[in-house]
Length: 262
Length: 280
Ligand SMILES: Nc1ncnc2c1ncn2[C@@H]1O[C@H](COP(=O)(O)OP(=O)(O)OP(=O)(O)O)[C@@H](O)[C@H]1O
Ligand SMILES: [Mg+2]
Image (cartoon, rainbow over all chains, first blue to last red; front, side, top):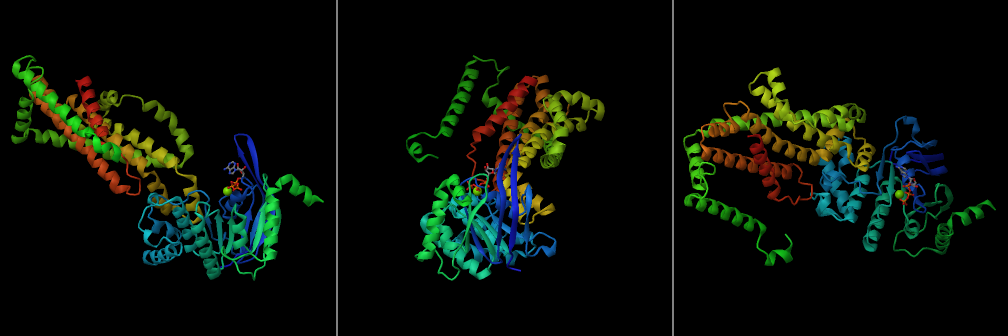
């Protein structure tokens, strides 16, 4: 129940706004094993957020499909998406925000508050349960969003640059916490980041996207047995992957695709 | 608020009070010196005396109660109707498109101009007055609620959908709270209009109510009573606006404190009185 794999098959998506069409994703195919930690990296505008919305079922792809390993259930599997933009409800306290998913599931108030408080202390906001979001910093609100996604204990977690607004120190602490929670619950995790170091420190697999329209440029599988985390010095094999991801991102779309076609 | 300013500056509120007191004193002095006609502008002391008498004899009580009843009846009917319709129109774009021409046509009508029509339809009693007052409250309430609902942050809706919120839960936990600040500001505008329309409709043929009392004082040339009733209306307006401010803070504690000074509520009462004078 806590693990869910999926496979994207030629997922494409085009937005049309007042006549103009933007192709955000073209023929994106990749798959995730149950319990896998996947990082998506790619330039701004390469369709990463769009893909997460499709995985969350908030957007129907223009073509292609996503197949989940529990599709037999017929109903869509539950997902929890941490939005890149501020998705915390200003009218709820921090605790109510975190417990929102449980509230929708009909979990009793006492239980959901207890579970929310446990996660709040995991993300370093132990004493802020009764505060309102406007009293928090942007980085603190992002952590509320992360806690809200974790508390519902869904099999597929989708995170869109959740640590983007954090300082280097808090970011490291949050990365450690995320790894700890992931090891504990073994959710399948799709994590979008701009930061190659972050992807290297966290992922089982890195999927690199090209610029618009977003396509999968390359996938890198990281050695699973390595010691992960922001404070570990990457082994030579991993350093080589880091170098390659960087050169793909820096090399620009033309260079990269030219190389691939050879 | 600004610590740099507050150290050296005299508070604005104090200056306002001093100006008001100075004006009243000047008025009093001029009245006593006989340089303004006590008929047109009775001395402040005479107005205070009249005000006192109105309360001591209890003469004002039925009028005050009648006015309050009309204000709140209109606020309730117009507020509920405007809120419900605004919610529906905000949530259903198609309904909004269909209703839009009607709103655009009726909204600019001076509601008071519809009073004779309502009187023909509902009789000359309170029903026609309350209909006008409700209509006055209805429009700002509906328009504000509608824009509150239709301007809900798309991300918040996506979050709600992502966690499976639907039906009543979506309404009570997301749609309503998200549009509550706009609804409350619609209600505040509606309340000031309710006061305005109540007094105005009372001038047109009512036998009881603050507007009626004012009109009768004019007819029997008891100008100090007219001024005294104006003071009562002013205080009523201020009190209602303050109550509204407390209600807003109690219902939306999550909204960053609005720096709304009472100058706004005073302005509201002033416009009310100004329009009364126009109508009178
Ligand atoms: N609602 C929308 N309507 C029209 N175009 C959109 C919409 N959302 C995204 N796009 C377009 O789709 C493309 C991909 O956007 P998306 O937000 O998925 O990129 P991203 O990879 O998440 O970028 P970033 O790293 O900056 O967050 C962009 O060109 C964007 O302009
Ligand atoms: Mg994005």
